[in-house]
Image (cartoon, rainbow, N blue to C red; front, side, top):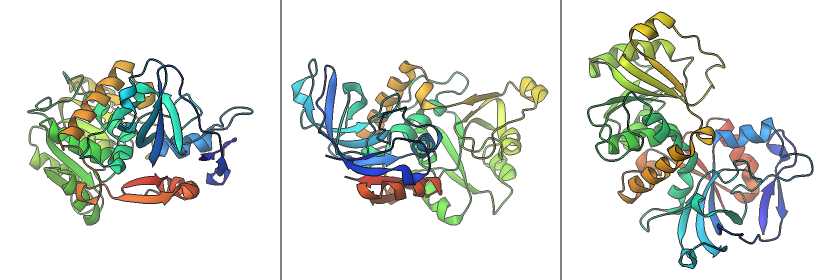
Amino acid sequence: MKAIVYERSGGSDVLSLVDRPVPEPGPGEVRVKVAWSGVNPTDWKSRSGTGPGEGALQVPNQDGSGVVDAVGAGVDGARVGERVWIWEAAWQRHDGTAQEYLVLPARQAVALPDHASLELGASLGIPAMTAHRALTLGADGPERLAPGALAGRTVLVAGGAGAVGNAAIQLARWAGATVLTTVSSPEKAKLAQAAGAHHVVDYRASDAATEIRTLAPAGVDLVVEVAPTANLALDLAVLATNGTVAFYADGSGPELTLPVRESMIRNLRWLGVLVYTIPDAAKLDAVAAISEAVAAGALRGGEEAGLPWHVHPLAATADAHDAVQGGAVGKVLIEL
C-alpha cells in the first residue's frame, strides 16, 4: 500500500511516499480502507516539532474517513463495509491517516450516516472535538451537547471561518445557543453566515466590542477563542459576569497576561483546550454528540456549510501540510 512517512522532524520536505505492507487488525481493532485524510495544524506542528523516535517511521494526520474492510478478534464482523470517520489516529501511535489502509482501535472508527459524505467525515475529528470541548466549559455547562443544551446562552466564536470556528458555530446553534462570530473580511463573513451564525461581526470594518455589546447587551456567556492574546481586550469588553473564555490556539502569542482583580470581581474563567489530553470521558461525549449532530444534518461540510474543501492527492501531502501552515481558509483534505 502507499503511505506517507517521516523519520525525523522538520519541514514538509521530510515527508516521503513509500510502499508498506497492508497491516492486519489485532484484537479490538478494525482496519479501514482510507478514502480521505484530514490535515490539522497539530499535524504539521507535530511533524516539525518532534520526530517519531529513533528507528521509527511516522505516518502523519489524526483525522480521516473510509470504509472498514477487516476486523480483529472481539469486534463485530458486521462492521465490515461500514463507512466511518476517524479520530486521533496518530495520537501516541505511529500510524496516522495518510496511508491507504489503517489499523486502529475500533472505537476510533465511528459509523458515518449514509447521507454524510466521506469528505465530511474526514473534516470532523480534531476540529469538531475541540469545538465540543470548548462549548461545554462554560459555567454550569453541559458535559455533552444536544438540542437545547445551550438554550438561553450567548456564544461568541472568534474566527468563525476557521475549521474549529465552523464546527463551533454549527454545534452551538444545534445546541440552542445564540451564536455571534468575528471574522476579518467580507469573504469570511459569508462562510460564517453559511455555517449558521446568527450575527457576524467583521472586526476590521467596525468596532467589534461596541457591535457585540449592542447585539448582546447582557454580555457573552462563552467565548470560543482562537487568538487569546490578540483578543484579550475584546473578550474582557464583551464577557458577561461568570463568563468563560475557552481558548485552543496560541498563534496570537505564547503568553497571556490576565487582569487578576477584574477576573475575580466578574468571576471570569480562562480555560485552555487541547483535545489530546482532555479526559477520556470528555472525548467520548464529544464523539457521541458529533455523531448525533451529523445524523441530524446539523453538522455539515463543504462551501455550502461555510467550510470549503481544498483537496490534494496523497503524493502531495507536503503541499497539504504547507497549505494548513499557510492559513488556508477551509478544510484541507488528502484524497487516497
